[in-house]
Image 1 (cartoon, one colour):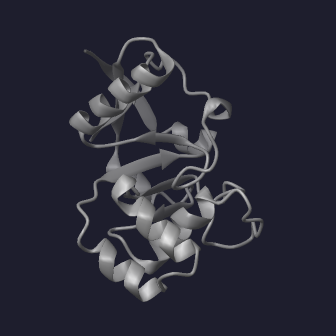
Image 2: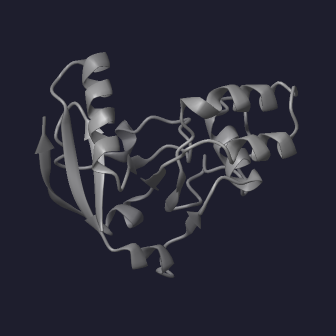
Amino acid sequence: MKLYHGSNVEIHEIDLAKCRPYKDFGQGFYLTALPEQAVKMANRVSRIYGGSPCTTVFDFDISSLEHPELNTRIFQKPSKEWALFVINNRNRNFKDYSDTECNFDLKYDLVTGPIANDDLALLFRQFSNGLIGVDILVREMKYKKLTNQYSFHTPKALAYLKKAGVLHE
């Protein structure tokens, strides 16, 4: 399958050290299966940081998600587990690295699941501040239109990703 990464530069080589921490699934290289979503991200990143919008295309064999060498976490849809995983990974004060509901220690080589977009930010804040419980959080997430993302967290996972080209604006 094709995966797309939107940025303000073409990705020649992936450097995980340059990836920002506190993202949905932890520090890693994020891609989407939707080219239009990557193009939107490329435009956004270029607007913020300068440069030209660029979408780098990669090939990924989806069956690699089942490869025994990789420790993967797959979220098929928004769920309580997914929400806690995202909230914990975004939380700069969360310190229980042994918790399976976070990826600060890169225990997962590759994670895939819904993107926690801006529509969910208010719900996550309400939950984190104790204004709503997890049941309400999960119920409300069902009404949100979410797209998927793939995040690669280790060199072992990156070995399954092959650059296939570039889309320029």
